[in-house]
Image (cartoon, helix red, strand yellow):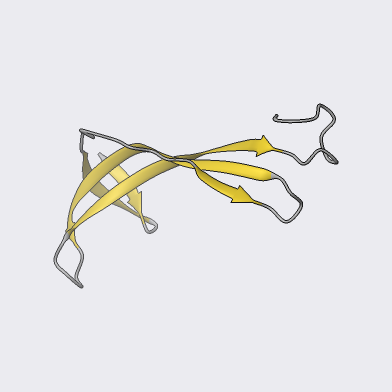
Length: 83
């Protein structure tokens, strides 16, 4: 299959993921809101190319971000508490 790598289409083979462990990153903002973000891998493909700097194979990792507004300060919320 062809995948986009740095603006060029390259041949790559999808690789099955045997295990996964996706964690939420939590950010407290200056206005008091808390945002949670998780990067979810949707596909990993291995190219036939190697990194010229170290000779390691090049993998293409496709992701989607999941964002959640975890909490608003009471002064910003119309429902008070968690959203």
